[in-house]
Image (cartoon, rainbow, N blue to C red; front, side):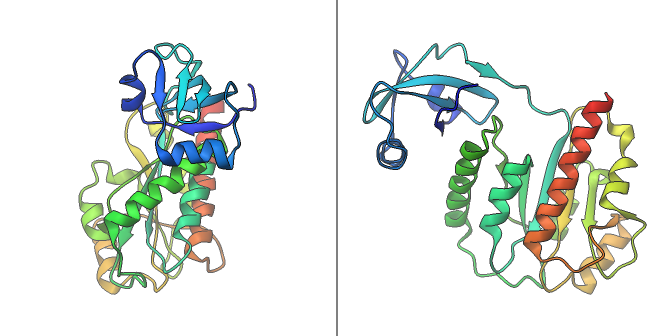
Amino acid sequence: MEDLTRLIISHERIENIKNNNLELSKEEAHYLNKVMRIKNGKKIFIANGEGSLWKAIKVKNDCLEIIKSKKPYLFQEQEIHLLGIAVVIPKSGFEDILKMCTEIGIDFIQPLFSERQVNKNLNFSRKLLRWNLIINEAVEQSERLWKPSILNGMDIIEWLKSRDNPERVSISITREETLYDLNQWLRKKQEFGNKKGGIFWNVIGPEGGWSAKEIDFFKKNNIPFVKLSDTILRTSTASINASSILNQWRIDLKLKN
């Protein structure tokens, strides 16, 4: 495939363009003109974050012409097995987690709140806008065709109560006894190998550790604890480690099938 600059444009905007011409926002125009220095007449790729990729020509500084907007240049089906990382928002490093989880291939990112969370003073709606921009940039850089979804923040216990498939959730933990590491737990889930739907989640806890109330809830609801490492990992390291294990499990599963 050609090595062209990529730009994420929402599916709705692409659906509603007229005469194949797409007007760019100020931010998009700045990115193409000033950052990437794309000349008029040059081609780029447009992706909608939902599996479709188009070629487009920069006809003006603020306008693209999409080639065959009704027929994408490339389409990729969504993965059968979807992967999610749920992370108690750390004091620092969460934006790096978003970038790297996106590059690795995670499909859903769930910010969590907990009793011992260090970073509790968040303007969440404002943060969510910024986090989506960071994910967009990581999608463009990594050339993914499916953009991961970042969800609204929730308390860990309320989030677990809302799960439709609690058997697909594991919690990474250090100081509690575990039967399996994450790799082993995933291998035990092979009965889901041919079933579409549902998300395989791994939960990364707070820097201060889970509270006694939270651990008691996990145990009473039979939510499995898994181990990521024999050493103590920072939130960012644990998130990337878990993401890599999840993604490799999915790759191996596809090879077997």
